[in-house]
Length: 364
Ligand SMILES: Nc1ncnc2c1ncn2[C@@H]1O[C@H](COP(=O)(O)OP(=O)(O)OP(=O)(O)O)[C@@H](O)[C@H]1O
Ligand SMILES: [Mg+2]
Image (tube, rainbow, N blue to C red; front, side, top):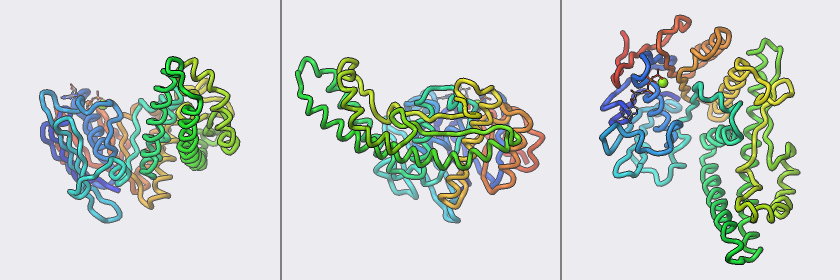
């Protein structure tokens, strides 16, 4: 998969910019605050319908402007694909090959993307929601139906929570809550199975990459923990009972306490929780292994590598890990866009672009 051309109009600090990208490595060089991350964010938004930085489109609008437009020419299995994303009158609209898409899930996953920035270290040290998000974003790219399941599940959660909040005063029947529980179980099981499948595949690949990164001295493990259990079948068969057991507590606390919205992914380093014990360098290796595993899994599934967007990553890695990553990129057919504040001497090939105050020009 490849991006040939990108046009950003009134997106962040870009007024109207066209960039032509090359196969292989594309290096975006510029001082702080010039628009490197904004460009990466634009591509990510065009491909996923979401920004990883902000929730609201309003913040992506160039200041004082009321609409933004993104256009991209991509290559997938030697076919050209033209994607557009428009935000106008507070509404967003996406098109594939000029045909509007009804739902975002028709659009996401057309061209796959792996994004990696220093903020991704929260996957190790942050709370469970960061790790669930990592899995869900990845699954959504391979199985767009996952987004609909998640949305439906979240809606049921909201409805059940609303009912829990009024439970006492309205003296509603137990059976009404049971009805929502039934849906929580049905949708929840699908979410748990999708996440478990992906975690197992990640484990297979990441384990090997981590071993190489640590010169075979350390091992990592990723395990999906569903409803507090490692054994997924057991968790799913006990799901109804768990919901029943917690009902009193749910009414008391007015929130849904059982379900995959509270699951976690355990990341172990030499059999111990990485969240508690991994050093800075080990955390970086873990995240790098997880990201490269994602890349390989998409390649296995789609027979093509996704785009790889690396924002500010090289400066965060020590020379061993940096060389590993650069070799990985250069030895594969992955198109990579990476940002940095000064040119990286170890990169042997690649097109270089200068980014300055929302203007990009390719260095001859
Ligand atoms: N909605 C917006 N409209 C106009 N300009 C914006 C908007 N949002 C951010 N900016 C400007 O964009 C610039 C930041 O761009 P960006 O985050 O891409 O920088 P960068 O080149 O990645 O810098 P660094 O090397 O520090 O990461 C800032 O100058 C900021 O003021
Ligand atoms: Mg930046």
